[in-house]
Amino acid sequence: MKQAVMFGAGNIGRGFIGGLLAQSGYEIVFADVNQAMLDALNETKGYTIFVCDTVCSEQTVEHVSALHSADSALVDAIADAELVGTAVGLGILPRVAPTIAKAIAKRQELAMTSNLNVIACENAIRASSQLKASVYEHLSADQKAYADQYIGFPDCAVDRIVPPVTNERMVDVSVEAFYEWSVEQSAFAGEVPTVEGMHLVDDLMAYIERKLFTLNTGHAVTAYLGSIKGYETLQESFKDPAINAFVRDTMAESGAGLVQKHGFDPAAHAAYIEKIAARFQNDYLVDVVDRVGRSPKRKLASTDRLVSPLMTAKGFGLPYQHLVVGIGAALCYTNGEDPESVEVQETLATQGFMAGVSTLTGIEDAGLLNEIYSAYLALKTLS
Image (tube, rainbow, N blue to C red; front, side, top):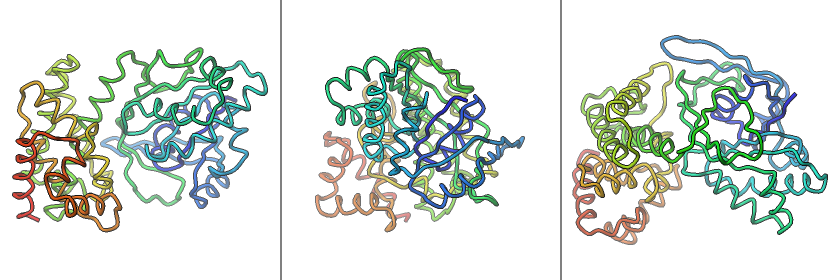
């Protein structure tokens, strides 16, 4: 049986990528640091994916095992695998890189000529390329040459909402019906593995930005505005008529920039926005505002879901006022249990608003910083 290793036994790892790999005949070894989840997976040897939408269904996943991310046996598992995936968060990728590097070194020692492809399934631009750079830091020149020949790091774009729904068994997971997994075809090493639901593309950046700057932009703005109004869930927030209309307009601004940049069909992209809006209102998958809004520092970065679409729209001379307010809402977000939220507020307090926003976003245009400040002040009066 074909083997895949999946770093991250959380909801995305099990409910999205793990499910597709299982459907494609892979035996899956999950790697994680959550010992309770690892023990449960090793006991059950599988789990159920509940697809919750207007039409609900179930998928049974079998042939599953789990290892702690620090277990030396994980090196052997990767060395024997055909595919490695990650769903751990961008900041964790450097931590898994040494283990992958050791597995590559072992494959070279064994003179293995079969191919291994490593796909970082993260909400980030070119996460696999970033993981590759971290892995190569732990390889010798000879090992890098070997990896160049036999190891691939295809970048991808992932899209599926998998909120933290509590099921009767901790191993089971609930997901929405919609998903997209677009993977860069040219970056595979050797023959492309057959994985059901994996969409091979040539222009990956267009798909990455379409998802990140539409769904993730709308998701974040809904959460931050919902937080200001005191809502607990994303669904409550999006059912607020004012937030609903505002988020749609925000995604339209971002979408106009994407249409200009990537040549998307305007009508098709408008339909994509409407599909996302429907997904935000799925009452089967209740998601909390603080989960969606967490890590505001990362989300305010120049390449991420708020600032990048703003600068793209502005660069094309298109309207961007709703995106400005979205940034203001993110700057208003306070959550004492989220280290990034605390850091954002400390940055604004210690550096002053303008300098702090510039540090967080990379924006240096004084006029634009003033627009963000005006939006921020207006939102603060509502919180």
